[in-house]
Every structure is written in structure tokens, then in C-alpha cells.
Image (cartoon, rainbow, N blue to C red):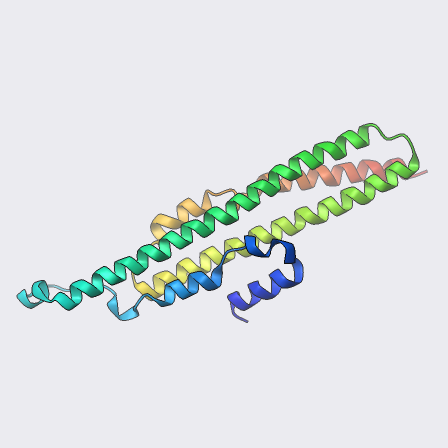
Length: 195
């Protein structure tokens, strides 16, 4: 199954409320298909006078550059959109974890502990979904950049991928830390529940 279709199915199945915050892989692919694979720069050992005065090639080169710029602009916008959503979710999760830790510190009865355990399990599940969100989008960026390299012959991979790999969506260390703290809290609560 192709990535675009798999992404669409996964979003509909697991993330219907987050749907607009995923990479617009289909739009990127449409923009990519505007790049003429034949307009790739050819290696030449010598330039002829005809090449210099050939107005058609000049227009094709300008058009190819315009389409390439459109693709890279859309790619940057998509990266910004995905990153912003991911960072907002991480910030929300930091706040929610602190609230859950405060609730743990102020438990007064068994019923409150059961409710807290349930809340922590749901919260942990949301963080696992965000991790899955990160993986799906990261895969999409890598795949579309590889397709661009294959289609156009020029590589934005060299300039774009290092910048992408530094983005928060690719660095899930904080999310893993939050998940571990959540798991530690659950462990303490379930131990307290033991006779």
C-alpha cells in the first residue's frame, strides 16, 4: 500500500480530530508532479551558442525553478504546521502531567486513586498517539523529499533534511520522558493499591 493511502487510512482510523494537522502529503505530491522530469539539468561538457540563445530552455528553466520554489515553500509550511501542533501538544502534556502529579500527592480515598489511575492510563494513551503522529509525519517528510530528488534530479535533501531532523517532531525525547514519568506514577499507585 502506498504511503499516501496508508496515511489517509491511519488518520481516519486513529486521529480523526487531528486530521488537519498532519502533513498534506497529497498536496505535496501534486506540487511535485508539476515538476517536469525532463527539465532536469543535463550534464554538458561544452555550451554551444544555440544553448545560450535558446529562449525555450530559458523559459523551461524559469518555470522549473518556480515549481521547485513552490514545492519547497509548501514543504516548509507543512513542516511548520506539523511542528506547531506537536509542540502545542507537548506543552499541554507537561501541564497535564503536573496536574496529575498534584492529584497523586493529595489523594484522600481509594475512589480518588481509582479515578486517577484511569486518568493516567488515558493520558498515557494520548501520548502514545502523539508519538505515532510524530512517526507518521516524519516518514512523510523523508518520503516526499526522496521523491523530489528522484523526480527533479536536484536535491533539496542536502539543505532541507538536516533542518528537518533538528525539529521537535523528530526529537521525541521529551515525550518519552513524560511517558516514563506517567508510567512511574502508575507503578506507585498500583503498588499502593496492593494489600
